[in-house]
Amino acid sequence: MNNSIIKIALVGAGGWGRQHARILAGRPDVEFCGIAGRTPEKTRVRAEMYGVPYYTDIQTLLKKTHPDLVSLCLPNKGHFDATLEIIRAGYPLLVEKPLVFSLDEADVLLREAAQRDLFFAINFNHRYARPVQMAQQAIQDGRLGQVVHALWRFGGEGGSCFDHDNLIETQCHGFDMLEFLCGPVDSVAAQMTDMTGKGYSTLSVALHFATGGVGAMIGSYDASYAYPNTHLLEINGTSGRVVVDDTVRRYSYQAVGNETAEVWQAGYFNDEDREFHKTFDKYFDVMLDAFRKGNPPPVPAQAGRRALALAQACIQSFETGVRVEHIAYG
Image 1 (spheres, rainbow, N blue to C red):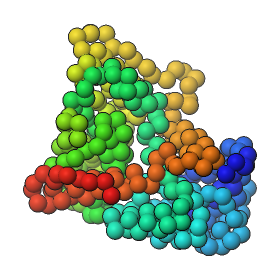
Image 2 (image 1 turned 120 degrees about the horizontal axis):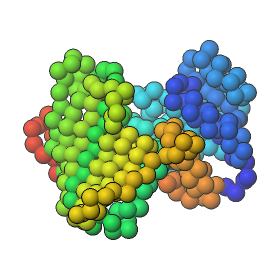
Image 3 (image 1 turned 180 degrees about the vertical axis):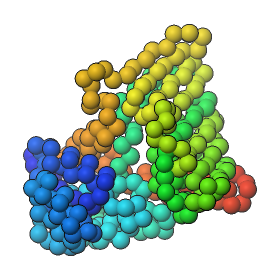
Image 4 (image 1 turned 60 degrees about the vertical axis):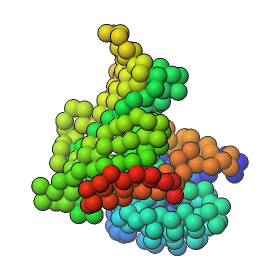
């Protein structure tokens, strides 16, 4: 795929789908060729915002537009059927997280895509926040020494969690981020609470990394996005520590024994690094570059299956009361 202009169709006209549409419409190297949605009026309004045709079913979208790539952003529990339909039609695609809620469904999607040798990417955009990229660079440069322990805390207002929604659809970012920075997690031990009556909406997980380090992940749908530091990432090593506040807001590095920290935070006019939504733009840049060059996705759909496997291990740990070990890659 060396075309200068790539035709991309969008499936989904919801809230985060607006970010997909914004990116597709704003890129000079993309022809935003159409949108399909479940709700005709909402889909029509979204399509008119960007001057593209709209459809109410995926097959018609594909037959009318013949895209090079499909971007899929549907409600979290509505991914499987639509994703499988696109794969079986033979189209490369980018899907939103979570991949699905079932490992069996994840395996079907990955197998069907592999049989067709399709480009199959997932959007774990947290990796592309500037503070997270800086943290990764510090670790790669050896500034932390050996990573001994890591902490992920992420919470806000959320709905029902009777299908472990918080764990699977939101904390998948935590699993992906911690493995991206610290390496594979090989065991988990989880505690959860349903005390607010909406399912297991808050959880705490003890992690062990294959490298020997340990970690903790705390996720809640009983918090508020209005709180400062609703997202906190901290990684401690034998030589130093990095802290990321609110994904995009602030990065700091401090060496062991040094009372002065190195701090980065976005300047007054630096909207590109300050706005969380722009992390998706950054991921889209590298994703589309890989697609154009015929390379594998920078974040393949397998990463979505991996996050789901870790979530399912947490559920098993909580339900049995024992640590789950040897969490293999699927």
